[in-house]
Amino acid sequence: MAENHQLWGGRFTAEPSEYVQSFGASIHFDQKMAAEDLHGSLAHVAMLKHTGILKGDEADQITAGLHTLQEKLAAGELHFTIENEDIHLNLESLLTAEIGPVAGKLHTARSRNDQVATDMHLYLKNHLHTILQLVVELQKVVVNKADQHVETLMPGYTHMQHAQPISYAHYLMAYYEMLQRDYDRFEFNLKHTDRSPLGAAALAGTTFPIDREYSAEQLGFTDVYQNSLDAVSDRDFILEFLSNCAQLMMHLSRFCEEIILWDTQEFQYLELSDTYSTGSSIMPQKKNPDMAELIRGKTGRVYGDLMGLLTVMKGLPLAYNKDFQEDKEGMFDAVDTVEQSLTVFRGMLDTLTVKTDNLAHATSHDFSNATELADYLASKGLPFRQAHELVGELVLKCIQEHKYLKDVSLADYQALSPLIAVDVYQALDPRTAVARRNSLGGTGFDQIKKQIAAAKAALQ
Image 1 (cartoon, one colour):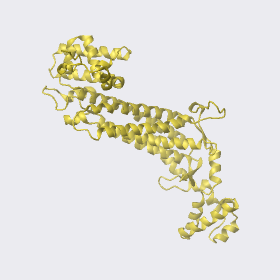
Image 2: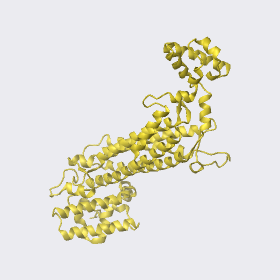
Image 3: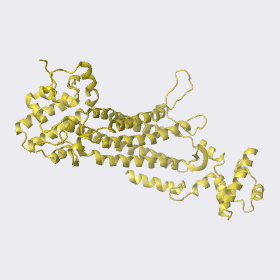
Image 4: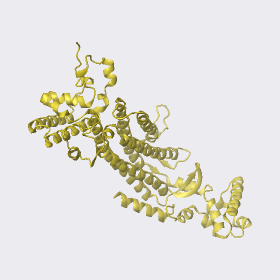
């Protein structure tokens, strides 16, 4: 009778075919969690010794073997095989080669189901801390850039049409606020990630007198799953992470879209550093914003990571299913994409040049001060709706005559409305328009300084 030599092969009489084995294996990607798997095993064997489930000398032998594997992993000396399917069986096989059959006792009171869940919690918890720090570092660049440009004027847009003049710092601080919400979401994600599934075993717990709180403490978790079925089948913490990544990437993509626009010949509001640009193989003059475009493009793959796992999860009965093997690659991809994107974006923003003269010119050669004229008339007692209509008619006339509101003579203004006096030109000045908007959260220079001061305090 043929035999199955897999670690789980006792009830099988035949080996899986090479093709099936390759299709079912996950070692080519879950080896990214080798360090976490060893960390989890060390905590588990410590618990087995602590509770007396394993004899002290056996536990010590296993612990020493695991430390050896950690050293070899750090040195790049561990080699994994597809025959052992996944990171768990590969490391168990390598441990057995190190210390002999006693390695088989490590799996007492444990299943690959709670083992892999523990690995993913550890992996994601570590990377959440990294991403949180990267968000803060980007926020610092945004705030520092804003601090340099409080009084730099630019057109504010709605519908991609000039709307009202604003401070460039006000524009930047809008993204600071988005990033702060991203930070808050990732921080909340930690609450659900900082929880240990270890000890749930396959799905029903175990008959051994384990101490789940002890192993959780060894791993640095602040909580444990209260239901063993939930512990091995929960992937909400990954879905939450992927959702947070999708929103963060959406914010970066919007920012990139504007950087790409502002960097064009048509706008010339800013210029990217050569360090974050590339050229063309055929057009010598080209300086392309490729890094911004890549971040914009990579947003789509993170959306795909989220949709992929949502689709995997939508029809799964409790508890563990092999479908869960599809939960890791999207998580790994999102981690790598978000960490790289935050790092590149931070450098790109920090080194770009803001063309303040071009921004200022854009605010003085448009009709973004039309609201100022309507507000001016309203402040003189004219109902705003009437003021709005009068100014709209005047704008149309100016367009037809190829001039701007600042070019209209006082006599023509007073013909429009006797309420208008010479002070109208001060009101129409873009700098005055920005400075006067000191309502809470507005673009007024004093408000912007308060926003920046509050952000600096928060970032400390």
